[in-house]
Amino acid sequence: MNEPLVQHHWVALAAPKVAPAVATSTVLILGRIWNANGAEHSVGNAALMVVLAAGAATAGAFAAAGRGGGDGVLAATAFATSGGLALAGVAGYADGLPLPLLLWALATVVAYGIAARYWRTDRRDTVAYERQGVVRREDHAHIERLEMLRSRTQIEVARESVAYADALAAALTARATLPGFDPQALTRAGLPELPALEHWADNQ
Image (cartoon, rainbow, N blue to C red; front, side, top):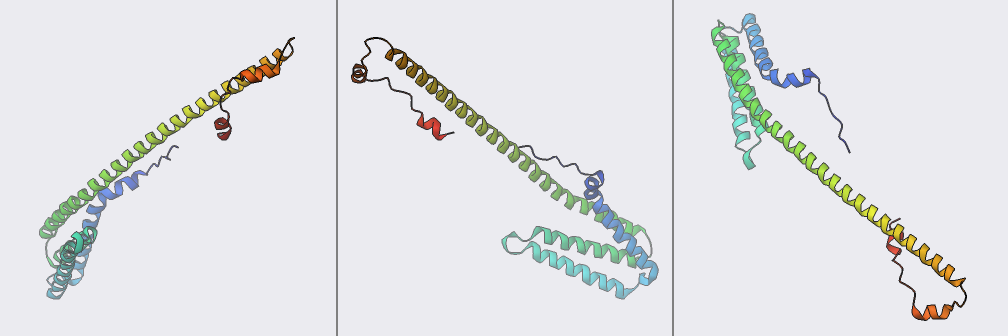
């Protein structure tokens, strides 16, 4: 049975590739807007972002070191949040663009590095799933071919059995019309054994 082909729109295919850059750029833009609205050189705002970033990093560390190897997705999310908060704090506190842009570039590279790892894992899972699908389809096709050959063989055997029985019945009928036919002698001699039709009848 053929599986339906799913064609994705180019936007759906490109969205995961540009998501890290869009995320870091959004944080940078919001930080600069915050800077223009009074966050520049605000010690209180900077301290708040430091506390939030440190808290997110701590949560990521606990998630990574959790029981059973930790939750990788939760840890990555927490560390990404920490990095975003740190970038927003620097973009809002600094009075120039060079440092925020430097941190934006660094954050973008790190984000793409983390995303590339998950993309590779997803691609491996997809390839493995497709290979398993091919193997399953080949196994099913092989079983179908064997069943078809077995059915054809049974049909041919049944046809030959029916033809043999018809020929024998016709021969006996013709023999009975001949003069001097003795059915008792035929019974004593024994009739040829007919091929078993029970197995063929059970498969109909």
